[in-house]
Length: 383
Picture: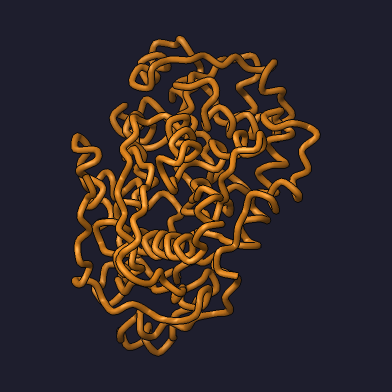
């Protein structure tokens, strides 16, 4: 059954502009007059030079971020589908807080205002199910970590990536008494993961390779059910654990300081790279590019909403993880970079870096050309 989106009228009027210009980007700066006199901060923000549709919201001082006037949503003007609302089947499992922009797009009206009638195709949590749903035309789009998409896409999977959604959400924890403070110290030790073919292993394999370690020979990867990873670490069955939010965030939070984070996918240069991306079945792009553009625009607008309104986004997401307090969900969202959502050339450039890293960690084939591969799988729907 289609989940009904709320009207979204309780938010400030959208900022309008051409695609790529209607969003506030990372170079945005606050008007000094607005800061000095405490005037309307959002209204006083100056929009800097845009680059494609890879954007960042302005970095408002913390004391201003929760002002209602600072909660204005963004708007990308694209030619929305004509006629009755277009039905879209969105593969979504609701297990990862980092994908909060998807239910926000549904329940805060971002899909609706682009004339889309979105139905969630519920999944049990496996990326394989999402890929199968897209491959068999049972779903039109889905959001998952870029590292989950790249191996199937390398094999010819017929999906295009149209935008990044955020950075962050994958973490590496150790016991506070282990003496381990850097991932390089894991040489000859073991790392627990919930899936030996999952994103945490792939990402931290890259970080290990960056430190000169062979991720297949210099560390031992051990698989445990996700809920038992913290237990395995505390019992000394592994020397570290790698997992994604919300599970890894909650494990650290509820360990009373016993578990500490030594690395994440926001460490070092990765702080400026996207993590999760929007994938759209290529046949939909061929059939109706306007629908794909509208879907991407709505997703970008929702991601901007998450960055500007993490408390509201957490409240929207909370029914998908009812055992986690809204305040903890909001804290997780604030730790991610939901103001970082590259598209077009910006997304291609970031994926070239990620693909190159995955080759070095032997996750992707050595024969894969990063530039050609990224050019093949990224679609700029705003061209």
